[in-house]
Image (cartoon, rainbow, N blue to C red; front, side, top):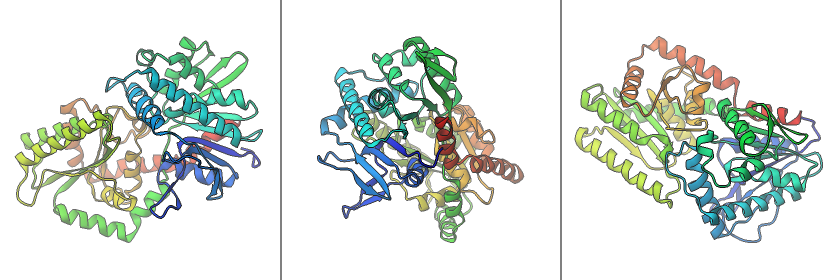
Length: 457
């Protein structure tokens, strides 16, 4: 894009957060890693919620980027974020694995907060700027911003799946959401089927005309495309090759038993991630003798998530009961069947676990992309390790050399894990080499550059 064209990112959260000393520091995460350097190079700005309900936050400069905080009240965090975003849209967009809730006061809060973000973006933008709006929290912002600032280019990217018509039609405010998204010049989705879902629904419910890749609202054209997000390959690869990481990976293996094979799972504690299916599969493998606690161990890292939401609290209790039952039945002195960690591991520690594992099991019931699969691959410069991946994760479209599974098929999961544990070394190396090439070629920086290039056309 032209060197003089600024980039303004609009996301639910700012890329910085206050540390314990009260100072701003850069937040971890792929989106921040990808976009902050681009915004910085373009002398741009970032609009987002600072993460607290403190009033009176003014724009400030950090990392040579203009930060514009959007303040939210406690009631708005409850209704817009925990309510409409996480209990209406999140389950609806993930195949209604949990029944979504529809409450008018949640919708009103979502409407008001989106309007506030749009106004903040309008005040921050200059004529000719590119404004990139992110994710399901802010689907109304593109149209609201276009009314305020028709002199900017507007892009939108959805990080989670976009549902098919039979599910999206449940939403009482489906027309308003579609019209909000159609305010963008470019609407990006993770995979092609999500982009087709959106285009068909826009024609069905929002009066758009055109094809699956180009829609028209009157004379204004809206491009639709798929842009699978990725990770910073070089960062993970570099951490994995560091002597301290290699030493820590060996230590992890010694701690669980050097001769035992490790099946690793890393997920947010979310009902979309398929905890129940994988634990049932592992229990089945122990019962039938495919694996034994002497030779194998399942390691589950469960990152706490939305614990104030009843569904999540109930799921956590169920997972921990199941882990306890499996360990109670199959563990031996000094050897448990399942190592369970309910915590968020620092990146260097996480990469050590990736490097220590023999098999990475990524089995969500539905996922927009799932970057854990890509992180694991980037953390295996020695070409060891096998990836077992749900076919319902967006990453499965690119990572065809993984062992793809239906996470609801317990027998299929058992077969895939068993096959991964017994795979010949040459096959393991060949598959991993191809997977690493795929992730290296299309990293998070290439993802951002591709989206912005299309938006600039």
